[in-house]
Length: 444
Ligand SMILES: Cc1cc2nc3c(=O)[nH]c(=O)nc-3n(C[C@H](O)[C@H](O)[C@H](O)COP(=O)(O)O)c2cc1C
Image (cartoon, rainbow, N blue to C red; front, side):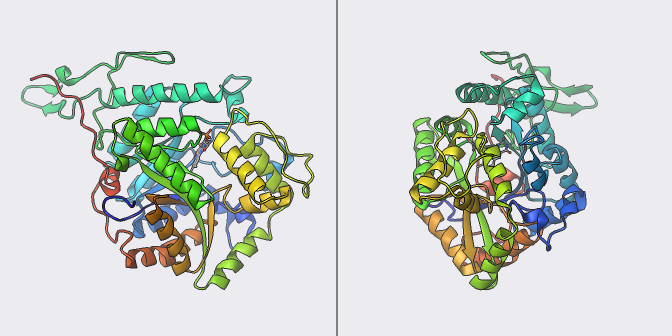
């Protein structure tokens, strides 16, 4: 069932000069643009012109793969710290939501609460936080740990983390700021509430040093898809990001998260599920295929194995490229992505080389190749089947791949009445159709 207003939501997942693993090496792409603010300004403005709900910058807190020679073949996609980058994009945009990843494993919740409240106020209500727990040893090693914290504990900690952040976001009542010059009261201390949080992982006094932000709570996105990730999303998230390959799995995932949300006393529409889509789109199907093949032809299979190893947390360096995809136990890392690759390899009997070919286009996200009508058909099909409330769009290249989506696919979705032609509101919550969480009120 589509969302209440019958429209789908779109996020633009921005990553360097493209999501395809070889995007940066493509002759049509300027790899140096990755280091240039103007590149991101242009992309953000394209997303806003096309009426996307939000732009999204992911993040890791390590160079994944370290100094393994295979890493040289991949561009350092998370070059800029995303909140700093989004701050620089505020004056270049007016409507589009500003979404960044911060991991609950390596930054204190007070900092995270403050950073997103600041972004929300500076952007007049456009901030969103993509909550991840991180899943690599490389990151743990940058923070004094020999090994990353186990998967279960990371999610347990994340749940408490959200609780603390929300206590801080709610620690000022909406009308606590008085600005009373005659009475000389800047704010009303009676309308401030300490967080008074003492839990298993965190002890935070509060109240915050900032006033309640424009959206009350910046939008919370959750991007883990394991059972723990789904449970956290159903309890806390406004939006869920996920990588899905098959429509039937995507429907089961989306409806399963909504079932759990309902069991938690929430409405099904309170949680918007947005799987990733990488669209190779051309004016004709042949042109779209050409774009896809041109990028695929640049892939060094060993770089693909490096990517696979980095995502899975398995060392596949000695693997036989033409042999079957090996069995390996789940790690403490990205469990749902491991499962997705194993399922894909088993169901389609893929060799390592073939699996690499399938993931280089979008790291396991759904890949659609076609003309604008064909791409819109597939999206509409998933939307109407209940697999998606919208999509997180991962263009293969930047800026060209996003231009193609904005100029070819968005008008087709709009023609079908499936996507907005103007922003509905002024805040990201309003555009997503999500209510502003009520704040605290003192007893009268
Ligand atoms: C669209 C999308 C974006 C993600 N962005 C990040 C990110 O920025 N940083 C990160 O460490 N993990 C990111 N992840 C990975 C998830 O946080 C999670 O670790 C992964 O999906 C495995 O989840 P699981 O361990 O619950 O199975 C992202 C996942 C998806 C689907």
